Amino acid sequence: GKIRVIEDNFHSFSYPMDNETHERNLLAKACRKGNWIIQIDDDEILMNAKEFKDWVDAGKASGMLMAHWLMVFKRFGDDLLVIDKDNYVHAMGTRLWGGYIGARHTGQNRQVTPLRLLHFAYGRTDEQIALKLKNWAHAKDFDTDRFFEIWKSISLENYAQFKNLHPIHPEDWPKLKLIRQSLK
Image 1: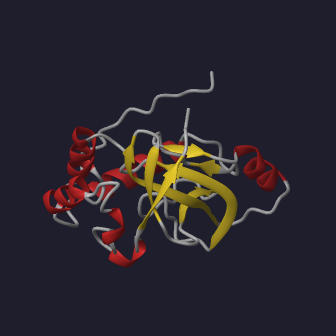
Image 2 (image 1 turned 90 degrees about the horizontal axis):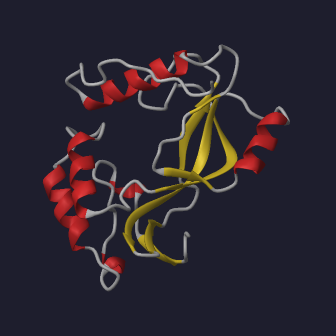
């Protein structure tokens, strides 16, 4: 009884970001008013969920909650190329019922939480990333074909040569770093 399916036309707006914002607002409105609405995507892993829950339960949370994002740019088996940026945070929680104005953003004051999210945004196969780029909320904001070619060209041997990789705000992704670990 904890899972509800929300059905709607999530492709009715011509601008993809408007569709994402509409979807997030419908999901939020399925929640009880006054509770925290935490939106974690299926390609994100909570690395310290208990610590975050304890922090929220302690009454420290307010406004628009931000999580520390470890963004996976490319995956080579257990080797991950991640965005190397200090204090890279992203919105993920609010109590503002149905108040999203742009994806997970609400316009509220931001509060950085202890939550760490491992986000596999681009840590996918060629086919998956090509599909994502065509359907992403920012698909009309940049040249997705050019970005895809750059993404494909990055390897474990040459990744250090690439700087300012974000397709819309280059300085948001200044460089890549390699993490070698098993995620199994």
